[in-house]
Length: 559
Image 1 (cartoon, rainbow, N blue to C red):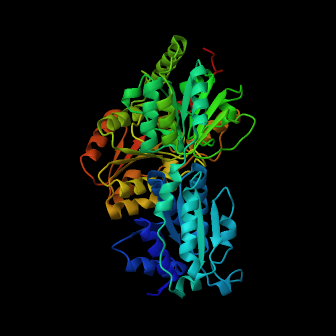
Image 2 (image 1 turned 90 degrees about the horizontal axis):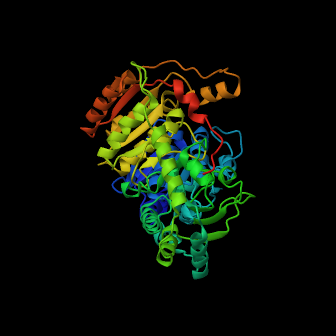
Image 3 (image 1 turned 60 degrees about the vertical axis):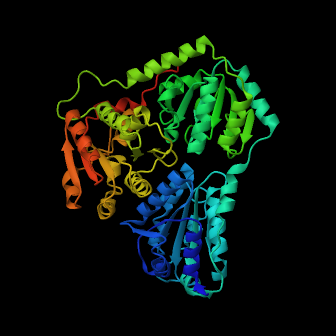
């Protein structure tokens, strides 16, 4: 049975398990939308209010599932609006498949409306791993297969296909391809016995070993393997912000918090004092080696790819392949690790230091919330509802949450380490809500970052998604403000923003909302939010006076 090019693309997506397509309609996208309409019982079209947010939603699917989320746009500005989310996905290591309808081939590169050289724009390794303009209808299924596999092979990232209208509409006798078996095989590579033996030898020689867990180890199988390894060896662990959630309460005595961003947490101090660093799936954009390895520690890198090499990152041993399988083999081979009392004492000291940094000051404002009060309220909720997915937007609130909020399940704490893009929070929360309809999605954003994608409250309301959106309100782009004050002798410019009634904004979308000025009121609002699966917005008035100290950094202490 013949089909047109758009049908062929949709048939291929369905055969490979794609359940959602995020899109904003446009004329050049019409053939694909009509193809999706024919298969609406098999694949859901989610219509959004801005293409950039559609791209972020596809990234959220990629982050949680490990398989590319799909976004479709029209030509011209529709496709150009994908540059930011695709660059964010590639930097963060999340697979995304973007497909854009384009003007007919005869009109390419002519003075024709909505006709930029979009594949040329996208064909940059910092934006995508693969970007092509497709010239032949019969090749569309092949190109989808190659783009899809490229998005997940090695370090995951975004891929882009630009398809002219005549290619989408032309008839073909081809059928969609199924290649999920190949995708499954990508995770089967393991290192040889000698590499495993060398790794075990280096670990046994270490006096002060530490594990840094990174984003590429962020899945259920890797989490179980990491837990078994830590259980057997007792080696202390730190996580990057993006890798939060791999250890359960069982490992509290091994866990020393997060590392990265301003590099001023007790976990950073632990790495500074170590003699062996075991990196597990560490994307160096999360934690630059120049920060933690300037004194040339012994490094064992367990990963799916070779990351960027420089004078501070040439691993002494590279264990390449499936992280969970290789770590299982290491755990089988190694005997119980003899962690010295000295190193245990250092770990305990830094854990105590982390607990002290989490304490709410005794003197706080009576009409606004100190950031650690907000974190404390949210921690209480997470402890009571551990299935909650926490989604972070960018900003100073993200530093507080990323540094001090504990989550105990992998891929249940989502934030951007790569581009640190503003506006990702609500779109990622929407993705999580589609994938986890029976779990509460807790989205956190500042009043600055939230407004980048606030229009997607319409999407939340339309689908009645199980999302509670926290908005930290301080009427400033504060992450920039406090750094301006630190860098320019107390001066700041261009960082003040007008107050908007976020409660009233949410209510105008038909979403229940509250405005809170105290921790007691926030606790009550969260209890109310968790009583229902309906969406809710909580506007939190924040006291940000102490945010300027987020960047404070004492000289690292030797223990």
